[in-house]
Length: 497
Image (tube, rainbow, N blue to C red; front, top):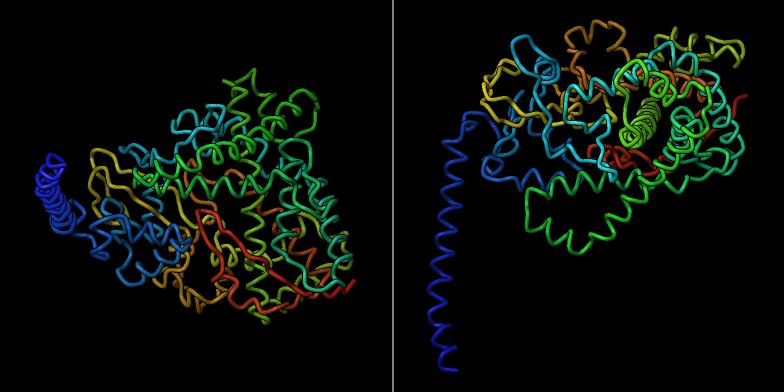
């Protein structure tokens, strides 16, 4: 007992000394970050310069895009949002970050985002090598071309028909959650176009069992990526939930693997996306089976949730802006004498529809946060600012699209800004980048446009849409972990056909 007391007496001064040293180190690090760090000259909240916690807190709450927007409105086009990270909001900075420039290597993605699938392969979204990404893209690009998407019009029409039929059946039951309906149709379409097998959400009027794993997996990955900045917390979480997390990820991936294997074994000549990969195998360096499996999951997510988000956001803003809705309905119903005339070609000739969708994408970009990049060893100029080497840089689609420096009345839903209205002549429309830019931009842009135009036109041809239970705060209720986590959007549908 005497020995223990003696050791305890010695231990207290040692512990106190260690705590004092630790506090001094933290204080020294804070002083360095605020006044002597290479990014010290850039504006931003002082606490954000000291440590990651303020940004992490907002990210984990699902409010990071709005948080960044507030910072930019206060501090300007460039903001220091973390000790080693700058956020930019100008269109020029987006071009400088995302597009290759002569005499400068392409800015690389943050390596923390290069996660492998459970089979050990990278997808087209996560592959770190630019040459491998180009290989993936070459094999996929033909399937996503405008011509290839036009060739798939019969598939799109089949599922739009199912959507309209389902809404006619259910409209009398009261407000319909349009988030769910838009998810159903976009998952069905991308399932058919990727695996030659629909998820049958519209036919069953229920989510396929795999879809929750898709949504949950993205959120879990992004939260774990953020928490990786705090190693102790990460270790504790992995210790507590490792088996659960790994099992969920494994189950979700195995379903995609099974679908790919079934599709390859079928040897069909159907021109789905996998067909373009498989038939080019003899002409170019092909994708391995593991790479195809990893990429197929990415295609399903990228070709479903993002388009459903655009549609839900546009419907919300139409309901909140009756004058815009009225003008759009008049254009659609006045532009056709029969529903059969509404095709991929004809909807592309409706200027107010196109402008409305562009404005919907500006106000509610499906991917609100761009992928962080890292400046090379030589440093570079981004948006007119000389940025030091090894700096993490971020261009947020949400921030740029909502910036009062880029758009007049930026928080107003105004399709007229895309129709050369002189009120908006000074808008920097290049700042709205819902599909990103550069060699890693969204490969599914043509498909998204085709779906959005057809679905919106057919919906408003068939129904008068009205606000259901109060949805005025719907946008504010959305959470974001790279993709939006959307609450229900109840809408009253009154058939007019």
